[in-house]
Image (cartoon, rainbow, N blue to C red; front, side):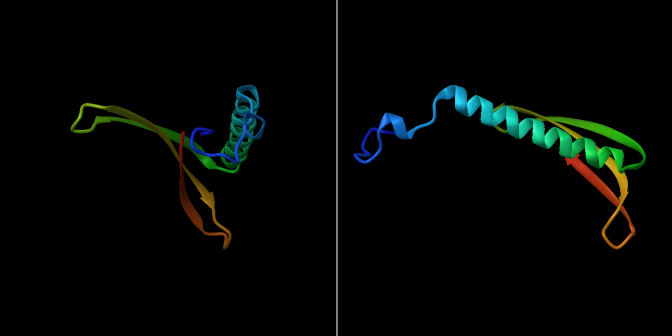
Length: 83
């Protein structure tokens, strides 16, 4: 990043441990947010997964959850989250 940018020095960039702490903090926040949604779920939470690869044979996997909840107007809503 500092290559070619004369106005950026090493002290302007965060240390790798700071970035790691920020990632873990974001994970914890999202984890708590997800738990809150699951606690408000009506009934059970279903999980599904899918595997695929692109034309270059790069593999992908997704895990998702599906559950019923009430939306802001009180109607039933099928909610889902990518995990």
